[in-house]
Length: 174
Image 1 (cartoon, rainbow, N blue to C red):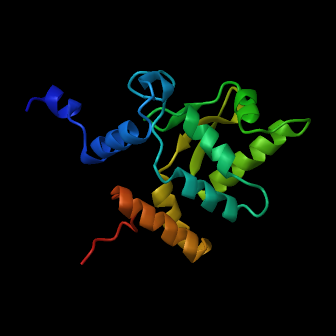
Image 2: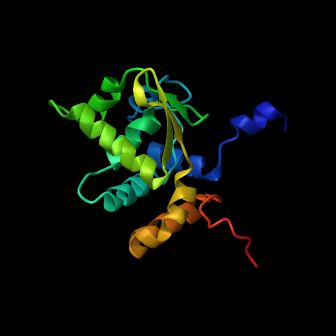
């Protein structure tokens, strides 16, 4: 097979999903679903993002961080760098409103930075102008002792299910 043929070949999981879709939703048209290969406006996110968001919320003591973190992922490209020229866009997408919306956003960003999920540098729009999103699995391993064991195991199980090899402590296995 050449490179193009390899790229076109569907995985077993994709083939199974397509068969299920054809069986249970035979009336479904291709444009009724989101296809990242056909539509613009997609990004790559970890398949564990929902669990990561839940862990973030559990670490933040009544000030949920998951939605703020997710907004960052929705804006980032595969280089993991964001340039936030207009924080009000991010603030609105995170659902913060009112007089303290920007203050709330900034406090959530600071909490994400303090936990190690992001690293930030000053720029024209303030402290969070340049943002680096770090690998959440690596950060969670570093925070393992602060996370409820059940949540950590849930993330680890999901990572194993999807073959995420970065969900480890980084120590060689014997």
